[in-house]
Image 1: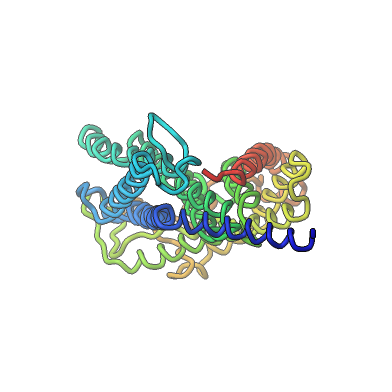
Image 2: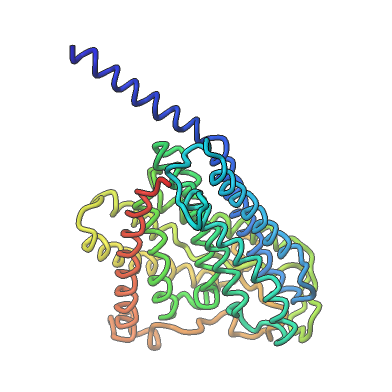
Length: 401
């Protein structure tokens, strides 16, 4: 008797799961694909926009890069807003009873996050235009309208992650690749926000580089390692970040451009690409290996090991890589070295470290406190970031709404 009942029950469960997946497919999957496309557009627009500012200046608000960014925001707002309206007013909407309710409306959690991000991005547009008219050009990336814009972008990319997560967790990993794509774009957002402190190889031996990197990057990598369903989820996330950064830089440097705002201290003829990205694939591989070894057990211990693995592997790869990227061998279109803004006054500083953990080269060899103390602080930041990332990833594993 039991031999005939068990297959029947298993078949019924499988049929129910298949029916639910098919039931959800039309609207939510279309929205998920639209949001992922918008996230990719944001990554392209953001990288293009920074290259434009570094090469041309801010000649008008309606640059092609700005248009791409705000079209992405509109695409997200319309697709997620439409999904929320359909789910709220159509009683037969698939999965309506499992959606998040807010102000009487219903929709997937990721769609709500995306709508907030879209509103933040669209609000930042007139704010940024007013800011420039009132205060002139930006001296740095960080300004109030840019912070609002970046938060909106992070909101959209995070929403894309949550939508992919919900589908991945319900469908047994079917959207695992989409989650890695969204996680990689989120990592790109974080790297962009810290560009002035981590973006140039001249900084890859500085205390701020290791401390800021350890405070932020493990958060995303640990969450990806915990929540992703790919075989190497953190490595895939870092590969998306590095691959997207490199491809966009390689393409942008082929686009003709000329400065339009004074002072023009460094005449250029093409868009200035971002430098070679932080090499996060190596620390990410360490994260995947450690997480596969320890799994969900002893998260505090795992966070300590992840922090140590991140800092040690980042030092091991960034220290020699920075020397190469400052050498004549890297001054080519592949490794993107020695390409600077039109406003800078060129000098020997281009090939020097702007801050060095060593004291005359002796601290590294002797294990002196000049090297040890900054890295100890980086370890503490990495521990906190990794522990938060594991907790965030554990929560994301349960996202199904």
